[in-house]
Amino acid sequence: MSDVPVPLLAKEFFTQEFLRDPYSTYRRYLDGRGLQYIDIHGGVWAVFKHADCSTFLRDPRLSAKRTSTLIDEFPAEKQKEFSELARTLSLWMLFFDAPEHTRLRKLMNKGFSPAAIESLRPQVEKLVERLLLPLRRNRQIDLLPQFAHPLQLT
Image (cartoon, rainbow, N blue to C red; front, side, top):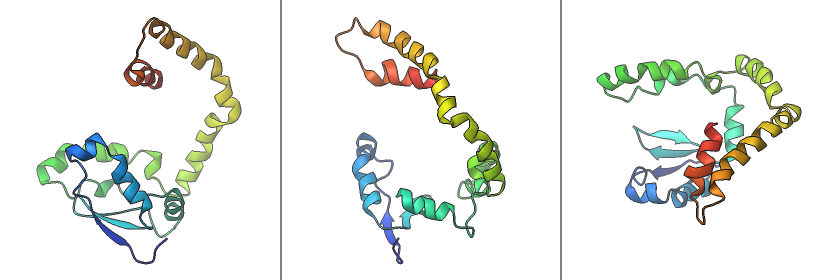
């Protein structure tokens, strides 16, 4: 990681060009060094590389308990509107620090063991067959809305 953060302006976010092709913007951030300042929503510090994220997530000086600050920059009327969302997010394991996060993660990991995942194979194969059946008679399909989205939702 870099010792000196590289400031970036995020004016390109939420533009039509970004919405059409976000990947060139993402690439620039991934090519950046370490901790990066982004001038968006009053300014945020962000990391984009997996190794950097892992380093920061393991730093005991930092906390995941930040849902109360998610809406701080909103106008007062919007803070009230989004307060329930912030409260709900505070219940997510993602926003817990160790040791509570570690305890919950160990419990959840049992459901993601190779054996647990493999036991789902027959169900997933049946679902895939069912979703593909009506698509077989089409010469062209739009894979995302006709297959990928229903598969993940089901």
